[in-house]
Amino acid sequence: MSVNRNIYIVGLTGGIASGKSEAAKYLESLGAHCVDADAISHFLTGRDGPLLTDIRREFGDGVFNEDGTLDRQALADIVFSDDDKRRTLDAITHPSIQKAMLDEVEDAEKAGEKIIFLNVPLLFETGMDALCDETWLISTQKDLQMTRLMQRDGFDEKQAQSRVRSQMSAEDKEQRASVVIDNNRSIEKMLGELQSHYNSLVKRVSRMETE
Image (cartoon, rainbow, N blue to C red; front, top):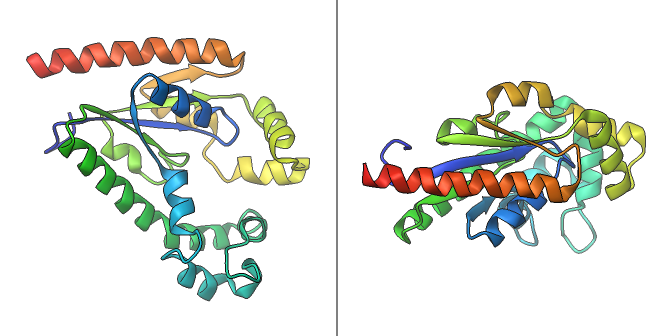
């Protein structure tokens, strides 16, 4: 169990276009409590969000729409073509995202939750795996990941490559993950494997509480 906590934390991660979001939605349908880093990020950088001032200071007015909202595509075009700019954005956003996630974990524990999933695309890259009792990886081969990304978001090959390149390789993540769930096949098979792991997890945590 996590230090000083009565809640079991599972880190859920996967590269872009790996199927991680579908996995998180399915886990929630099974009754799991998921904290979503992307949803928190969008809130913090949404209209009148607390991170907009720092983003404007570092990246200028060009990454904002006329109504003052963040132009996410303009910002992405910058940070995915310049590693230094991407690290600058990470330094602005990651601490606030992590604090908000930990606040949600604390609230979930107070509400009596026994298991919580941290849905974090950059789980290993940001070191948030250190907060987890175990980590689950939705793994996809790079060529399939690229194809899905181009089909889903309309990216050309160069744009898709820059997104994939910005993250740790699937091979490196697989070496660090407690559980690797293969998503190089139909979504139904991936979700079936995910359900099996979840059912096993619930049983394990229940046994741990009685020991």
